[in-house]
Each structure stands twice: as structure tokens, then as C-alpha cells.
Length: 279
Image 1: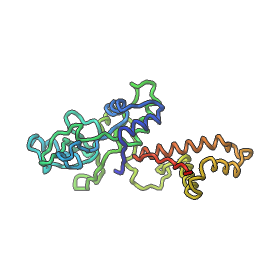
Image 2: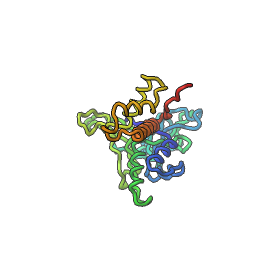
Image 3: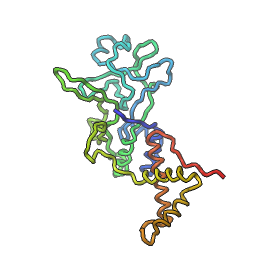
Image 4: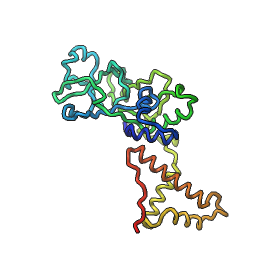
């Protein structure tokens, strides 16, 4: 799946902007634990020398029982994944949509499998699920009534067709799937479709932000928003074109700049601000 993720700090900042509330890292810890803002575990051991791999090791519980917890090595691994839904159950067992369960481990430098802890991963978030969390927070009459969100932006894998099963895409089931959870439906986003409902609606603010950058590139950094505002009002005076006052255009420019910075933040980028003209 082609999902991208942002850090917990970026998710807190994005959620703060979308809700108008001050969301802290401590808040995100609580939101992640109960599914208000679903988090993912991205494999990133603090001790890379001891855990040099780049993915969680998944082993079926029957293999764990047969080999023994203390005798497992990476040879026993059935699958490896970089991203898993948070939180991990106390039993360390995750269920998949294919009907197969896995126990989660990390492989050390001796190729032995050990139980994972929070030192083996970092918590990350899918921006589209953070946006949905913001809507749920704003709509809820009280914090206790906020619905959990079903993880829908994790890794997937393909299962080939055989004599018993059709080919299908499988994923790890969200720990909140059994609750009355809402979900961002992104599982089929990689399938091309001619249906207009699958096409992102145009963002007027981002289009304005992009056009401002194009103007500055063509005219030079000294051609700032004030000059663009003046030229627009000459071209389309407010006496004819309603909403083309200096203040209205300034508000539109500010909103466009904010939308651009938000989009860059969601993509895990450091927001790029326009350079000030040199003297």
C-alpha cells in the first residue's frame, strides 16, 4: 500500500491546527491507545547495532509453540513488515484479514527472535486518519463520545490464487475493528477508475498558492503579494468583480499560504516559506 506517514509531533501539530485546540504529545499517546487517532508502529530500533534489521518478524503461533519461544530464529519467520497497527495486544498476536494470526518479534544481531517493546519502533500516523480524527473531535458532544477509527492505512500483501482460495489483498486487522469504529476507505486507492468520485476535488487554496509561486518565479522575488494584489485589482476592479477588494485578496493569499504549509506538513516536509527579497 502506498501510504505515507508523519511523526507524532507532526500529527499533534496538524490535529491542533484542524481542531483549534492545543493537542500535546501526551494527548496523542492517549488518542493512539484508544483509537481516537490511530497510530502505527514503524520498525525503528533505538539500538540498531543489536537489531540491524528493517522490519518486524511475524511468526504463526503454532510455529512458536512447536519451536519454543526461546529457540526462535529468523528462519522461522513467515512474514516481515515495517508497519503494524498500534497498540499491540498484550499477547503479541495480530490477526490478518486472510484468517492467519501472527506473533510479532524483532530479530537481533544473532538472528534470534525476541519480543518487541517500545524500544523497537516509533509511533507514526497517516495524515488522512488524523484529518478524520479532527472531524470526530469537533463533532463529538463530549470527549467520551469520540468514536475510535479503524486502521486502514497499513501495509498490505498479495495472496496468490490456489485451488482453495482466490487471489486477494490481505492486511493486519485493526485492534479497533471490533468496536463501532469509523474508517477511511483507502484500500482501493491504487486501482485506476474513470469514476469522478475517485478523483480528489480541486483545492482552490493550493491552486492560488501554486500560482503565487509561479508568478514570483517568472517576475522575481521582488514581485511580492502586495504587487500581485495591486495588479489583480487593476485587472479586475471590485466595482465590477465582487470580492476583489485589497483585504479580500490578502485573506485569500494568507489562506492559500496556510493550506500549502499544511499540505507540506502532512507530507512530512518542512513547510517552505517564500523567500524575502534581498535589499
